[in-house]
Image (cartoon, rainbow, N blue to C red):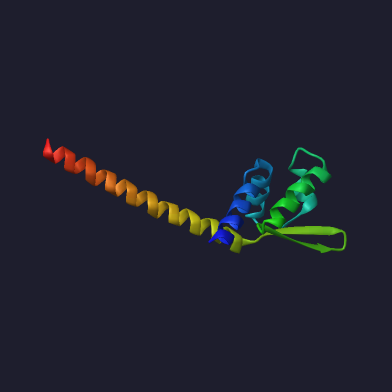
Length: 111
């Protein structure tokens, strides 16, 4: 469980930055070169590469170098981890909302 939490913390840390979320959003349309992705970001290439390395180090993207071109693609399996966590949270909060509704309804009936 601790390993799961550490990995999930890293994923959320990587997604906390708007530049990295924009990269993920763009890669949702398909693979793209670092150069193409960097053109959409208002920063220098070395600064942009830090974002790419962060996403890659937390397993959200994969990069492959072919000649002088580095291509990025989403690692969709890593997003399944976030999806599982969100589904768990939905179940917890749905149960709490159901109990609250039952409590409020039972209080209204006693009045």
